[in-house]
Length: 65
Image 1 (tube, rainbow, N blue to C red):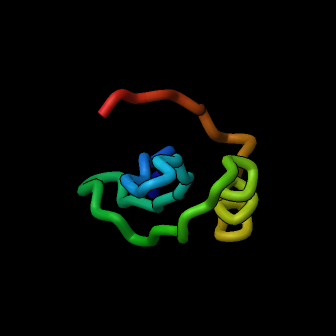
Image 2: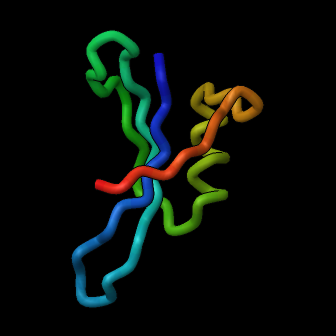
Image 3: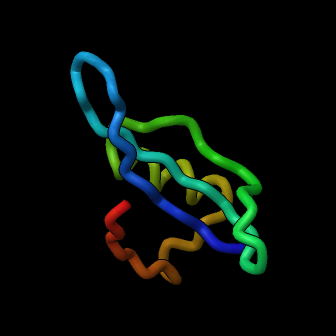
């Protein structure tokens, strides 16, 4: 199982970003679970850790969509 931490643009009048985490299957890439939206990266990571993310094993990358 893999994890994805994403910054997502919210298309609203304030035009702000939010953070979310997703758990995905390694083979198929199918999403198993997704978090609510967090205004801050740290809040997102804390919630992901509460759901089983081992932050010590993470490699953070950026990706253009």
